Figure (cartoon, rainbow over the protein chains, first blue to last red):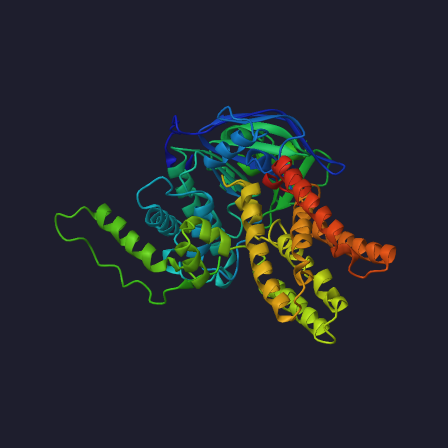
Length: 296
Length: 251
C-alpha cells in the first residue's frame, strides 16, 4: 500500500463503471468485454505490450469511445457531448506519449494546459491563481527550479514529471496515467508513489505499467492480456497465485514442469511451475504471480 | 506556446520563516512570487488582442496555434511572391491567375497544420481537457484565416490591379477552409487538406477547360458556389463536431 496506510475512500473520488466494453483497432480486438468498477485508491493495470492497457485508459479518458459496451464516470456517459466535457473537468490524463512542445519552457507548457483546463476560472484573479497552481505542481514534481528551462533540454524522466504535473492540474478526481514511471529513476519513482499516495485520498487513480515493483505498492491490480482482464485483485492475491509454485535451483531447468524461469544475478534459476521433488519453494512476489498467470 | 520569459531567476529562498509566522503561508507566498516571475510575458500579438478585449485565456490559445510556425509562414510568403511576380508582367486580368489559384490554399494548409496528432504534440492531452475540440479547432482556424487574409489582401493591393477580381480568392479561401474542416470530421487533417487542395485545382482546371477563360472559377457563379460550400462545410463540421473531440483510431 502506498505510504503504508490503509486506503481512505473519499466522496470526491470519481466512480468508474465499465460494462462489457470492447474496442477494435483495424482488424485487431484491442479490448474485449472489459468490466470494471472502481472508486478511490490506486489501481494498476499490468500486461504485456498490446494487452489493451492503453486502449482501456483512452476509453476512460474519453478520447476514444468503446465500440461495444459502456463506460460511465460518475454516472456520466462520454458518448454524449455535455457528459464528455463534464467528465473531462474531473479528469487528469497522462498519455503514454505525452508529446510536450520542446521549444516551450516547462512553466509555459503546464500553464498552457492549465488554460485549456480552465484552472482558476470563475475566481477573482484567474490568471494569478492559475499560475500559482502551475508553480505548486512543478514544485510537487520537483521541477520548480527548472520552470524557466526549455522542455527540449530536459531528461526523459524530467519530461515525464512535467507531463505528470499537467495531469494533476485542477485537482482531478479521476487520474489516468499511462506508464507514468516510464523513464523515471528509482528516486523519482519513489516520489511518484508518494504523490499518488497523497492524491488517492481525493481521486480514483488508474495507472498502467510494465513494472511489477511499481504495481506492488498499489491497492489493486488488473492484469490484461489480449484485450481481456485476466486478473483483478490485490497485489498480495496476485503474488499468492504463485504460492507453492516458485522455487530456486542452481541448474537450468530442463523438464516440462517448469512454465517459465530466468537466471538471477547470483547465477541461480528462479522457476515457476510444478516444483520437482525436493525443491525448496520460496515466497512469491507480484512478478512471480504475474508471470505465472501469463504463462498459464 | 511560445512566449518571452522574464530572464532573472527568482532569488534564493529565505532560510526559514520569522518566529510566529505560519510556514505554510510563507511557502504559498513564495510560490506566488515564483509563479509571477516564471509566467511568460504576453507577446506583442497577445497584448494587441487583449487591447481588443479578447480574454487573456483566449489569447493564449490563439497565439499557441500550432500552424503559426516557420513552414506555414514560408508557404504564405511563397504564394505572395508568386502572385506578385505573375501580376507584375503585363498587368492584364490573366496575370492574377497564380495569386487567385494559390491564395485559397494558404489557409487550407494552415488549418491542416493547426489540429490533430501530426500538428500538435500535446494533441492527446488537450483532447482530454474540458475545452471542446470543435471550439479549439474553430479558434485555431480563425487565427489562420485572419493571418492569411491580412497578408494576402496586402498582396492583392500590391499587384496594382484595380479590379475587384484581385480579391477573388477571398470566398474560395473561406470555402476551401470550411470544406477542409468538414472533411476533417471524416479523415485526418493532413489528408483533408490534401483532398481539398487537389479538388480545388481540379475545379479550376475543369472550369477553365469548359469555358476557355482561365479565371472561370472566379466568376459570379464560382463565387456563389463558394458561399454555398462555406455554409455546407461549416454546417457539416458543426453537426459532426464530436469527431474533433476524439482521437483518431490509428493513433
